[in-house]
Length: 176
Ligand SMILES: Cc1ncc(C[n+]2csc(CCOP(=O)(O)OP(=O)(O)O)c2C)c(N)n1
Image (cartoon, rainbow, N blue to C red; front, side, top):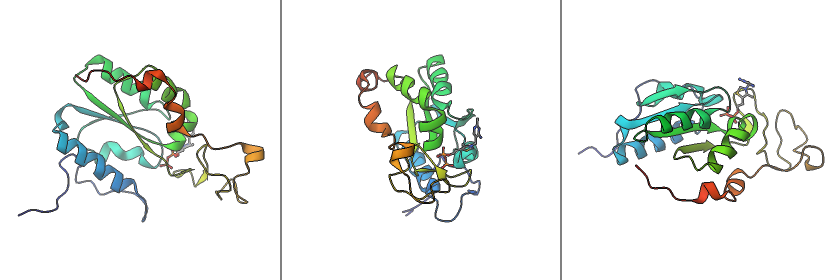
């Protein structure tokens, strides 16, 4: 009897992530959900820019690479072109909450029927651990060696709380 195996929605490609990184675990959780829902054949993932830029090698579904921060805009097009598509993005906090803030907020405001996997590690990982909009007050990063000083750089952006205020994000639409 098989009690543990790799999800079908993951390829056999070896992961490139650093030891201790949680992207691999999160990939697995997403892949398990795709398997359980039986949607592998109609799922399209949108890879973003950041440590997880190579997700298109790891998910065993159709994948599209978006420019930095633009994954929700690409996902919008993929979903609207065929409502049968199940479309998800996979984005870090630098991608989603900094350069891609507009795409994040406006796709939610429009109530797009897409799934956004938000991997918030509170830094820019790929470029060396700089402060992100989500870095916590006092958090030490490469660009805040004495801790994030809210008096000079402001407070963290609370993305989920912010999006929860948008009517478009809250209206439940009928799924295809
Ligand atoms: C247009 C553009 N601006 C800046 C960069 C540099 N850059 C690459 S990844 C990244 C941030 C990645 O951070 P995050 O989205 O939090 O993902 P992580 O690497 O932490 O998983 C930045 C600023 C880029 N590649 N393209």
